[in-house]
Length: 279
Length: 277
Image (cartoon, helix red, strand yellow):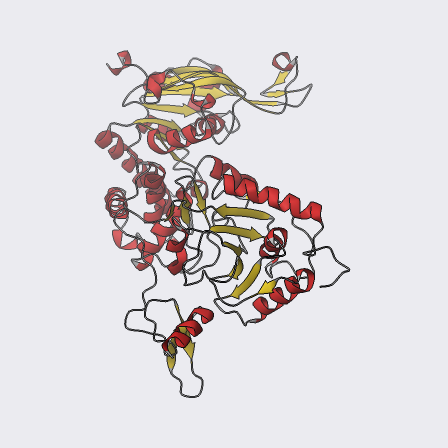
């Protein structure tokens, strides 16, 4: 551990301020709590929101797992793990069941999370209304007055143009019937994992300086019209060639030599585990 | 005959000013601007009533406060003073300008419909025409996409826009078509009061005639009350039952349209009527 820095890089006062914002976020599910986003030795937009949540929550006994687009080995995941390891010396793992704290970008693990785990998501744009209203002052007011017609309008416009809702990720969802929330760029395949979950979900946006949360057993519904139900991605007839799984979220890959398109599990650690089990 | 009914809309002492005002404003008004502090009194103690099924015309030169009156009714501007009572909102017992933001949105979406002079203000130009109408229906709480599409088809048909173009954005439409889409959007939730702010200004004559014809048909078909602002006396003569003349933020004359146009009392109204080409 690098002794030049405080445990978990941030000073204790900063960590406490962030934890206070987290508590507020947990108390008001889906509400975006502003917080004083700290400078980190990583550029804004590279997961600084998630890292600040992780750093402020991590203790000596925690076991950390970091996921980037489902993978434990990609650049973002490896470097965040290295950085947190450098200033805390906590154990890291790739196995979802072993981790107590998981920081992730764009995916929720396939293995159901338990009530002693926290999932921290990195969020680029926390505001679901930003696409229809550029002014923060107005979007705050719209949340306060539950003026969510413009988001529904997005869905309707999609139905009129393409006969179905074409939003694939960042699919807006209603939290406890009060706030519409952007679930970060997870595929809508993962949206249903947010509903009535066992674990605590925390969302951190470092550049936008917002924290929000979904506590365990919270009602989270993906927006859908009465006559056009919510549909997640379907991988019918496709399966992962490595582990043979048919009901996971699959990435579409392209073999540049054969020109063939094939599908593979996006959650690599889960895929490996299933492979090991089969052997 | 309908005058004995309770009014659909009753405005009492509406005052809208641009500026902070001072103690000597009312004595120092030059037209509607205070010479001492520079405050503009866009609407100065305006009271009026609109009855069921009636078209009330408001005429006046530019800067007389017509559009300010409409915009404050549609909550685009916050008035300094005054009350507006709607028959359909709490039976006319609550001043709509004192209700909460979400209540005002409800009033805007289900009791009133607004058509602006400039379609950019009333339409989402990048969304399809159907979505523009659906927005109103969504705001009123409906979450059935099929019903929205049905209603959009019905309304676009009523304003003679081909339903094959309902997925197209109004920015691709001509000015007259945009205005008609705006009217159909305003009608989406069967409002009891329609606010028309200079709807035909800037359109060429044949299109003007078409839009006016449409308004006449809407009035006959839905029996809706209309507040019609125009500086065009021909439009007023054609559509309005009663007319109010505004000058420098004040109402200077009101009465039946024929009466105002045939026998104007106020000097300004006389000048206005005689300036008809």
